[in-house]
Length: 466
Ligand code: 4AD
Ligand code: MG
Image 1 (cartoon, rainbow, N blue to C red):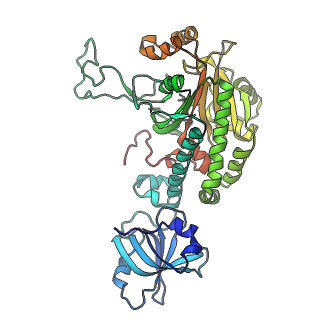
Image 2 (cartoon, rainbow, N blue to C red):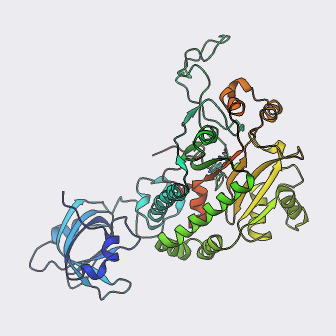
Image 3 (cartoon, protein in one colour):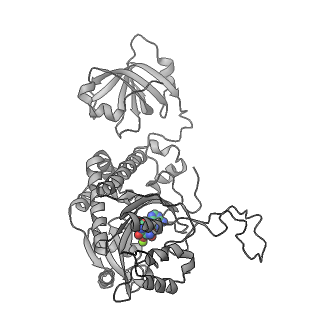
C-alpha cells in the first residue's frame, strides 16, 4: 500500500516541501469545480483541523470520470507538486497529477453535509462524527492529554498500575454499580436457594468498578506513589451534561502524603494539563475559543498561571448562604453541594478554580480520614469554572480502629473488605489520593458544553449504541 505524508506534517514543514512531490490520503471535506475545468478539493486526513487544498488541473489527462465520483466524504489519494497557494487562508496547495478513489460517498445519503450539524444529530452518527472539525479536535486533545497524564506522573516517580475492571467492592458506597453476572435473567436461581450466587461465574456478587482507588491503595502501600488511569462505570440514572455511565478516571495514590500534599499534587497536575493544552494543542484551543467557548483561552491561561483558591466546606457553605442567589436546592451545613452551588462558588463568588476541603463525615465514603473535630473528614474536591467538580480525593483513614468504626457507621461488613482492613493491620501508613474525571477535564479544556461530546462513544441511560 502506498504511504503518504500526513497533512499536519506537510504544513509544519511547508518550506521543505515547496516544489516537491507529495502524496496524501484522506477524506474529502468539500469539492468544487470552476468553469475553467479546474477542480478544488479540500482534503482532511485527521491529523490537523486544516484541510489541504488539492487543485486538479490534470492537464492532458482525462480524469473527468473519477472527478465525478469524488464527492464530500469520499476517501481518496492525491499526488502532485506542493506549490505556493494564491488562495486565501492557506500558504500551500497540492497540484494533483494523480488521483485515486478508494471509496466514494453518495451525496444523496452521506449524513455529513457541509453545513454545521447539531451535536445531538452527530451523536446518532457516532461512526462518522470524528470526521467533523469539533469531534476530530476533541479526539486529538484526548490523545495529547492522555500522554501528558502519563508524562506528569512518570516525571515524578509514580508507577502506573492496572487496577481491575471487575470487582466485588463498591468503593464509593453509593450503590451505583453495574452487576457482572453470567446468570440468565430468563432462568433466575430458584427462590429460597441458600446461595443464589452458587451458579454465577464468580460465585459472589461482582460489579464493574466505580473507582480503582481501593486497589491503588494496595500498591501505594508497597510502591510509594502509583496511579491508575482507566475506565470506570456508574449506573447513576442522571441525564446531565456532566455524567456518563462509562468514563475514564485518573487516580494517583501516594503513601506518606497527607491532605495538604495531596492538594498540592492535584493543583500542579491541573496546571500541567492546562499548560500542555496551551502549548501542544494551540490549534485546537484557537478553534474551540472561536467556535465553542469565547472565554476558553483566558480560562486556560488563568488556570495555568494563577493560584487556586482553597477553602473549607464550612467556608463554602458560608459563601452560599450569604449569597443573594436563589438556588434550586437550599444549602445548610451538612447538605451536599449540588452542581449549581459548585458553579456559583467557582464562577461567580471566586472566579477561578477552587479546592474545597474537610467535608461533613456523613456525606463522604467510609475510607476518608476522620478529622480531629470528629464531624468532618480530610476530603478535597476541586471545582473549575464551567463544570464544577472535576477532582474528588482525600487522605485515607489509616488507623485500624477508626476505619472499623467508620465501616460500622456506614453499614459496611469488614469481612467483605478483609484485605482493605489488613492494610491497616500490617504496616499501615498515612496516604492519600484523588480521582480526576477525564471527560470533565476534556470539557474544561475545550469548553464543550456536553460531556457526551468529550468521549468517542458515550454511554448514558438508554444509550449504548456503537
Ligand atoms: O468524586 P469521585 O466519586 O471520587 C472517587 O471515585 C474517588 N474514589 C477518587 C479517588 O480518590 N481516587 O469521582 C472522581 C471524579 C469526579 O470528581 C468527576 O470528575 C468524575 O470522577 N466523575 C464522573 N465523570 C463523568 N461521569 C460520572 N458519572 C462521574 N462521576 C464522577
Ligand atoms: Mg466526588
